[in-house]
Amino acid sequence: MIVEKAGEVLERHGLCDHCLGRLFARLGKGTNEERGRAIRFVLNMKRSTEGLPPIGEPEKCELCGNVFERIPELVERMKESSEGIEFETFLVGSRFPEEVREKEGAIWREFGIDTAEPINREFNRELGKAFGMATGKDTAKNPDVVFIVEPYSGEIELQINPLYVYGRYRKLARGIPQTPLPDFEDSVASIICRAFSRASGGKCIFKGAGREDVDVRMLGNGRPFIVEIKRPKKRKLDLDAIAEAINASGKVEVLNLRFVSPKEAEEVLTKNHRKEYLALVLVEDGVTPEEAEEVAEKLRGLEIRQRTPWRVRKVRADRVRVKRVHEAEARWLDEKHFELRLITDGGLYIKELVSGDKGRTQPSVTSLLGKPAWCERLDVLNILDD
Image (cartoon, rainbow, N blue to C red):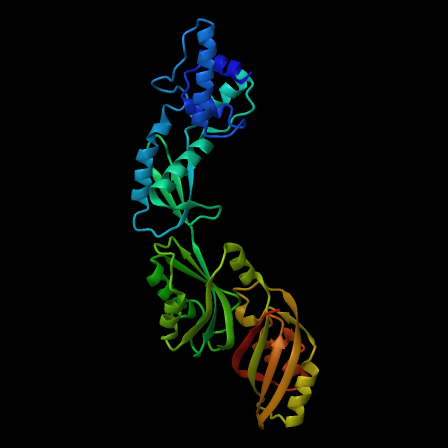
């Protein structure tokens, strides 16, 4: 039945062994070229017994135009396009002209063929095998690079997939924004990205799991972050050496650097962490040790309704967020100062928790004391994982 169908096709269309075998790609094992050669051989034996002339391969396949013969040349072009790029895994994609794909579909419909595979699928596979043999690289589901090949023009588009690195940072000094701002020489992001860009030759994008104000330090176990490196020329990065270069700044330290997948990176950035803070509270009207302790007792387990703070209203959606204070401890310092150590839900604005933000945060240290209170200094002590 296969031989009869192949005979009908070849009587009407001059196909190479690749294109002939691809019509029956879902049957048996082996390459389409081997399948096509075998089918043609058996067909011609049958035709010989019937006194008919053999049907050989045409000089030029009317469907593919002998495009598979270009594979060695395209392998060399792929090697040239990826010169200087460090990678171990790859995939191949191709862009075939619409008329080729339409003609292929027309042949399937003309002869009622439902065992075929598209030309681009075979071409990608065969070109990938040839490139792998020539370079020692392997194909992978999530590759380092992707080659998009235009088979007839020979144009190669190289897509270099990004690298993702997870870490945690400590901000040791005040007066440093997390991301670049006017009038600030450095930022956490620029200090970290400078080292990654220098090592990888790619463009670095910094993404923090939350952020702290310019005047707030980030201490303890550090804030989780992701570095996305676009179009890296080098992928085998010495993360210890990169950490050493960042830490030498004296302003920012990084911990626990490791490569992660895009999915893991997204989980880090979308996870809501509890935070541990140390706030220095100023009460101009005076505060006693008993009042400080009473505020801490009232805050423990308290639900806070916080409308978007006035100071960030232009960059944050104006809505009421409900957050909880899980733990609170007070340490009285003098007649006007006490420290508050807090563990809260992520996303609770601590400065406004202290001041009340003119009633936009309820309750607050100000409302609990019955007199104005201000956060004079703030440190993030730890980002707490579940």
